[in-house]
Image: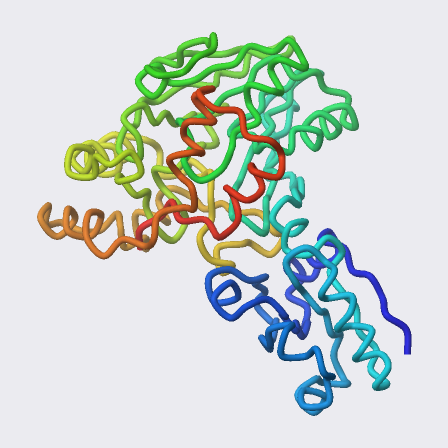
Length: 375
C-alpha cells in the first residue's frame, strides 16, 4: 500500500467539516495528553514511537480499515517511519506533513462578516494553538488585530484580496504566543498600536491605544472604537468595529473568560476583570458579535470554522458572566487555574522587545495548547 501525505490545511478542513479521522499519535504519552489535534469526530490511539521500533504487529488490529488514518509525531520523521511500517502490513495511511510543529503554525482565514460600507472582517484561525487574529478591510485598506508571529500569512492574504495594511493592533501584551504585530508594521509601514499600560517596559516605538480612539481606514469611515477593558492584563483593550463586532481580546471567550494571573497579579486584577465583564460589557449592545482572541475547546467553532457569538447569548449562557457573588467570582479566577502557558515569561519579554529568540526557540516557547482562559 502507499503512504500518503496530509497537510495541516487538509486536516483543518476535516475539523471544520466535522469529518471522521483516526489519528495514531506516536509522541510520548505526556505530550499527547497535554496537546493533540482535536476534531469533533476524530478518534485517537497514542503509542509512543519507541514502542514500535520492533514492528507494528501489536497495534495492527487497533487500526481501522474503514476510516482515514493519520500518523502524527512532533516534527514528521517518526510518523513517516511508522506510516511506512503500517503500509508494509497492507494498510493505507497518511502522515502529517511537518508534524505537530506545522500544526501549531497553520493559519486559516475565514470571513466572519460584512461591514456597513461594503468592507469585510476576516478571522485568521490558528487551529492548532487556539489563537484568533483579525483583518478588517475597507476600500483597499486593512487593519490587523492580534497577529501571530507567522507574519507572511497576513501579508500574503492582504495582497490576495487587494488590501494594504495601514494599522496593526495588539489588544494586550500577549503571554501565550509571540506577536507578529510589530514585524507586520515594520514590513508595511503601518502604524503599530499597543495599550500604553501594558507597554511600560517595551523597547520600541508604538502608538498608544486609549479608551475612545477611532481609527479610520478606507475612503469611508469605519470607527474602530477602543474600549479600555482591563482584567486579563492591566492594559487590555477591546474594539467595537462598525458598531457590529466586539473584538474582545483575551477578556471574554465563547465558553470561558480571561485569566488575570499571567503577570503574577491575579489578586490585583480580579476586580478589573469583573468590572469589565459585568459593567463595561453590560453597557454594550446585546447584538454585538463577540470575536475573541482565542478559543479553548473545539466545540466553540461554528459550522464554518469561525469562532463568534452574540454578546447577549454569552450573557445568557457563559458561566463566567453569571456569577453574582463576588467572592465566588474571585475564587474562580484565582484558584484552580489551568497550567500557565509554556515559557509565558519569555514570551512576554519577547513581545516587549527585551529578548530576540531565534525561530526554533520561538517555536519551542509556543508549543502546547491555549491556556489563557478560565471556565
